[in-house]
Image (cartoon, rainbow, N blue to C red; front, side, top):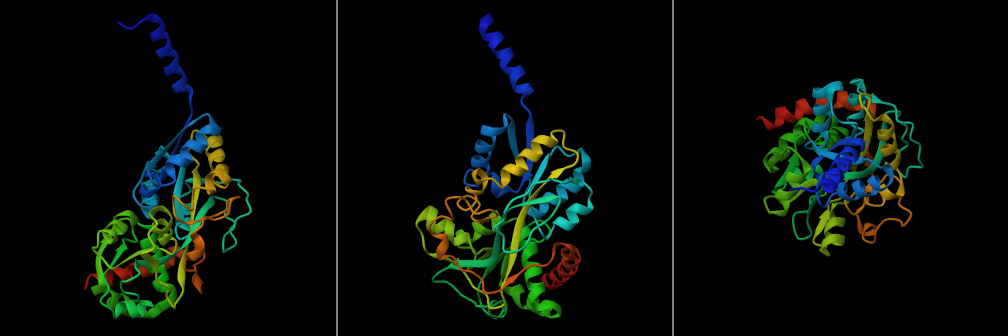
Length: 325
């Protein structure tokens, strides 16, 4: 039998929990894993907000937008974290996002000024492989090689979409021929980055579509220098990841507080060694040792956000046609 003091304590505890505001953040799956940024970000933000920060994994980055479109103003999300500039124009067209008002001195390779979305990290897409494995130096080399590759579906994954726009930026009207050449290199197309990288680590492919920063994980976390990102002569497509507040949020002030927290040192300092990307604002301690070894592309490619939706539709049609042969 429970004692009355204990029951009273339980009642007070329940009331306190009920009064604690909850901030729900939809994000991509790898962000909320034990090794991703989620746990550290949750601990650091909850230490300042007197709230309960709850991350919800919703597949890969591009799938986030699909879920928000489906849920509309009924969504339980207050913040969506994990879109990129290839999706921000489409996200803005939904009318579901509200202005943020966050300002910061970003360390991005591009000027960034978007009233709806706050950048939190960035990087370059690249094919990652073993140092003793195949090393094509361009898409053309890759297409004529026997290298087995794993890529991600552009309809559900931001890296997959980035690859389409990367190829489109370089090859333009010759993109169909390039995809036809790559078709027999593709082992499989996964829904998200995590599945693709897992298959590569299991030896199911020679190369995986990932980031120039991915080898830093193996080097820093595993003391393993066996992985490398391949420099391509055509240049590398860039990704800037962002978060936005939903206009339907019932805790809009708390959502604003989280977006401002995203550009703080407490958030940015965990990005390099948990999300394995470049932070949007360089941490006070600088980048971790090992990042200086990473490949830096000679040419950076990125479509303006406003042009991405039309380019996506055309590139997706070419990709689907090539892979259906």
